[in-house]
Length: 321
Image 1 (cartoon, rainbow, N blue to C red):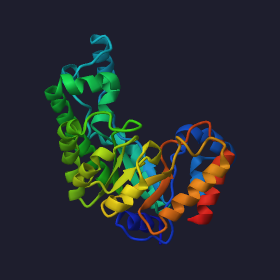
Image 2: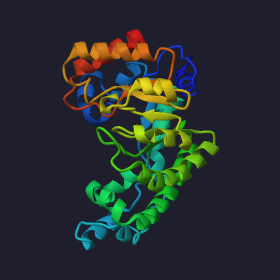
Image 3: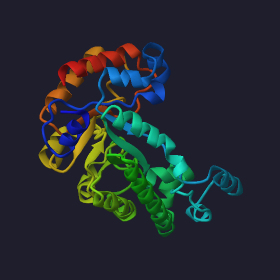
């Protein structure tokens, strides 16, 4: 199988010839990797990564307008304040050049499966409100938030459709809902204030025949049934270290969505414990030999991870997968 075929096989519930691999490496380890390999891209080539996470595109708000809003509100923005300024032009295609370059590098030149980071609903607006205020606003201003979220959803949908037109294989929605043991808010709040605005975007993406994935850190077990209803094809990271059991996944959800992850940056990689790292990689690969996993880090590999440990991990993965 070629790389894209391998990834698509997993997403569609089939058994690949070997487990597809990737890793979120550039954010913290770019300099360390580049010092030996010349670039992160050269490391990705050495280990024959099968898929690629693409970042880029326009921001949701004009930076100058948003800075002026912060100043006028003394740094504390309410939903009503945010609605007083327009969102940025999502159709300004000059802002998509970095996505085009990444697609050329990963998809055209190397044949990788590509997915693009797009905003969610809750996480995106944490940037503007601050997470503590945002959680408070869920209780204080639900009707005003619905207006914020509706506008965000329309922007997200168009951004996703523009990326699909450029050739991405999957739309990756980043929307952290989980704390370490449960949701950050109740399942009822999720159903009322998150579900409908994600459905708005996901329905449009699925209509084009494009895959859609979710990134949410933490434990989101309480809304997995709703995630199935929304139609997500892939969940990242399905965080075992936050109490999300693979036993539950295989018993109930494996026929509905694939997982991306398996290499946990919170507990496994980056701590110099090579025996733990080795046993975890062996366990994960054995669990998912027949499919259902796109093997990837659970998040950005942290700066305390040495290059030697990173190489140890990917040497072993390459040997076993």
